[in-house]
Each structure stands twice: as C-alpha cells, then as structure tokens.
Length: 121
Image 1 (cartoon, one colour):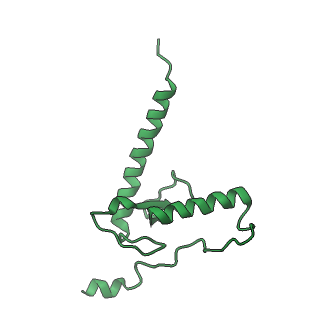
Image 2 (cartoon, rainbow, N blue to C red):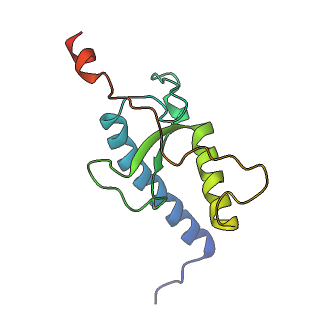
Image 3 (tube, helix red, strand yellow):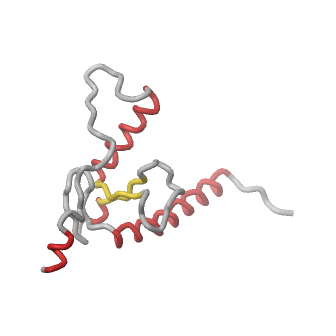
C-alpha cells in the first residue's frame, strides 16, 4: 500500500520543480543576452549576477521557447516593479487610479543596438 503524500511532500516537490525549471531557462537566458537590465540598463558581472533575474514577458513561467523570445533580463528592482504593475493591472484593470503613470509595457533599451561595432573591437 502506498503512503499518501503529505502537504510538506507536495510543497517540497513543487519547490524542487520550480528550482529545476529556473536553472534551465536562467542559464539559457544568461547565455543568450548581455548581462544588462532591460529597463534601467544596469550592467552586471559575476560578482553581482545573482541580482539579475529572468522575467517572462507574458508572465507564464512554463512558456520557455528556446530562442528566448519570452524572456528579458531585469534587475531585482525592475523585476519586482514589473510584477507589481502586472498585479495592479489584473486587479484594477489597468492604470485607472488617479495619478497613475504609464511607464510603458516594453523595455526601451536595446542591448544589441551597436552589436556590429562591438564585434569589430
């Protein structure tokens, strides 16, 4: 007879699945993109790389195409801000509250803008 799973077992399994999934797409994203926050343009090195996160543009953490089209690298602060904005949009239906600012949904920084020139160096 098989023992039923406890709540602790289920939570541990979910955490392991999340960690394993993050390792896969995080490693791929860090190889694909320069270590620069797509919002504030802060640059990262090995010393502070743990502060650079992978954001899923469509907020679906299970949608991880190999070309990285659903990912953008954001620093911890910009990533938290992005998720807060998303939660407010879901909860309140967009920027309808008084004094709300539109910060734009997409990143404006293009890390590949001068790639050809950088490659020549």
